[in-house]
Length: 449
Image (cartoon, rainbow, N blue to C red; front, side):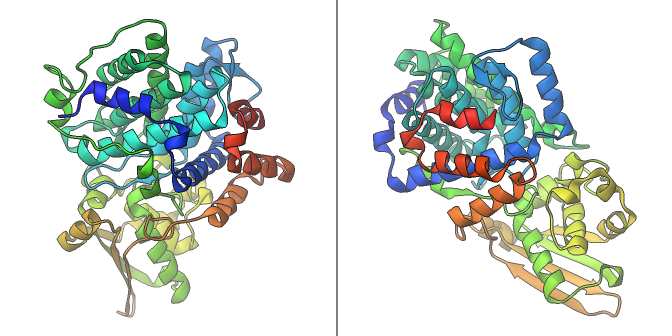
């Protein structure tokens, strides 16, 4: 049975020197991806609302609010910067059979803690390795979705662990930080069911804020329930059931996927497939009479109608969690990027009409394949003349079995940031991240201000 002390010992024992060359490289790529998404999200309304809230509450602090000309405490910076990384739903994902969290939800918290304590790049990489590993290990061994809890219930634990590492907390302080975070902040799955709201894109920011606050409380002497995981009425009693962990020095980061499209994780293969089909067969959307997607259980549950009506799409938060919308928009536009989530695009009749004829069904064989590491999708597009075109996908570009390397990530970085950051600043950011072990966290955050 996993114990709170076991997690805390892992945090204490994992240092930069323990990370393999591949893990260091993967963490830098995760950081670049997160920064690119954050820059693109600066103008979005919900992150702007978070910014207004943060600055209403605080006059300033030692930590950079990315993309703004203001600063804040590490707690509020974690909230704000995580909102930027997460809001567009373009972040990374870890694919476990019963849970798919987004480990980049930890980045804002760990960077804020690092800036607060004047950490070096090696310290930051160690903190990110700890957070990514714990998030992935919890998703794999202790999924919470079917119990009615949101995956950010894992994030508050992993982010508290990563922040504790960068803040330099000792063993007992780290144990207390994890205990406080995990006891006080178990989020409900209702965030992602029914008529989805913008809170979907901000829930992990709230978890990141709570994680850093828990670490700061522990740093200043507050003790948490020592048996968070193993104690009576603790996590394993109430949330997950008993589980074991097998923590490595960040090796799980190599199994994290990069999103190719702006879409919920489980939609990636299907979207890629329908774009390929539309382009390859030069499909005219006006001549389409039906679209059928066979997918795996998780996709049907979350974005195919199992947790709410996915045919009533009126907002961005609903669109990026609706397989009918995403497939319809991708077929018409032959892309699924930020432009497909503009309000006027969502409301347009062409996509609203087409999404009504998208049929999403679970195929048990595809579910088994997903649980064995693929992300399969079978799509049939039937035309008015009776012709049916089919595409079958095992995975997508960006999945761990077909990863995106530096070149692809640099392309994504440039595409997301070229309208907001000049070429010189982009080059500085890229070089700083690629040579992070030789830099300080302040070198990075200065470029994000």
